[in-house]
Length: 78
Image (cartoon, rainbow, N blue to C red; front, side, top):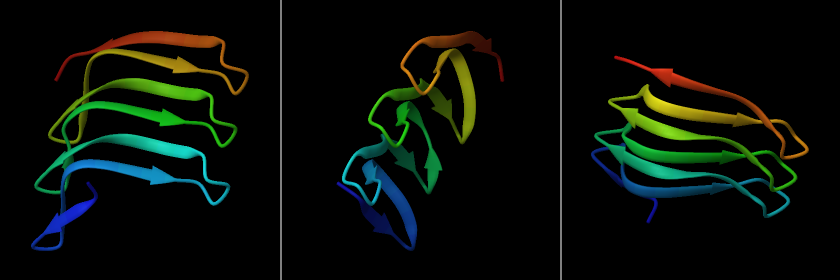
């Protein structure tokens, strides 16, 4: 977890806020976000989730308000 190869992020990563809550989790390939990702608000509630391919948002995504209620859904095509 949280490794770099030739200075680029690689594999599964997790990052945390200073308060210890999870900020985000997902995968990197050659330093680019690739695969399923989740990011969280500072209070621990889900902010968004979806998939990346080569650092681009693709497919079905959901975004949430700070209180955890669904804000919107979208579908992205490369």
